[in-house]
Amino acid sequence: MIISVDGISQTVHAADSVFRCAIGRNGVIAADAKREGDGATPIGRWRLRGVLLRPDRVPLPPLRLPWRWLRPHDGWSDDPRDPAYNQPVCHPHPFGAERLWRDDHAYDIIVVIDHNSQPVVPGQGSAVFWHLAQPDWQPTAGCIAMERSAMLDLLPRLDRRSILSVEG
Image (cartoon, rainbow, N blue to C red):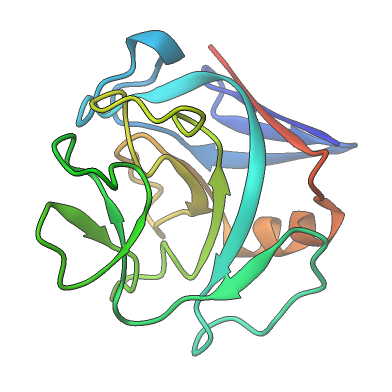
């Protein structure tokens, strides 16, 4: 399945469904121009690496992608100086790292995409996820965000062959 993200209309198209989404506060940008902290969502075709779920907030949906439960100490390195840049880490961590266990509900469901992962290039963006939108649909720091019900509708249809295609 190809899931198409239209950065202009801020919609996700999957099969015969169209869903609203939020993208980076600075719109979309070519993947090779993506930089850490630029607030832009990278254009490209991204494989889905797996799903992270918050066990106290989301019941396990039927999944065909690899998955695991989030833990309170989970993080994701966002410091280009870190040898573990753009990879999962545990807090406390000696370098800058985003906390994945959050008070808001944005990371109750995270689909990890393969942006800047093979190979990881320090400074070309980290923690670009497909996750849940805020209630007020505020822009993200560079991720793609959807309503919870839409994400739960799509998750069972996704597998390792699925592609998230971000277009400008």
